[in-house]
Length: 57
Image 1 (cartoon, rainbow, N blue to C red):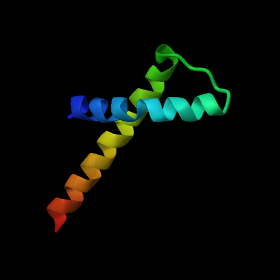
Image 2 (cartoon, rainbow, N blue to C red):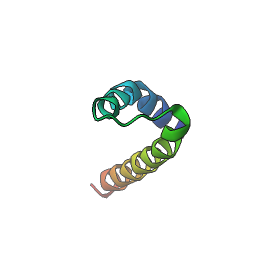
Image 3 (spheres, rainbow, N blue to C red):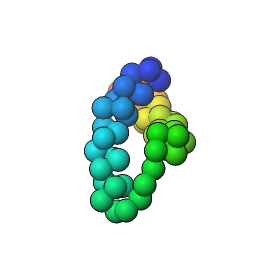
Image 4 (spheres, one colour):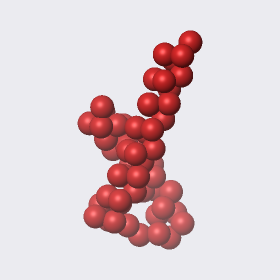
């Protein structure tokens, strides 16, 4: 599942990078790695929450 989450994150990465660039925040891929890991954690928790919610119904 993490691989699918990473693909989703990478698909939207250019948009996020553009927003940061417009704010004058310069980051390279090495700088973005911790943020991508945080995003994957959030996506994983959201997935588990949805899965648990669906099984309760």
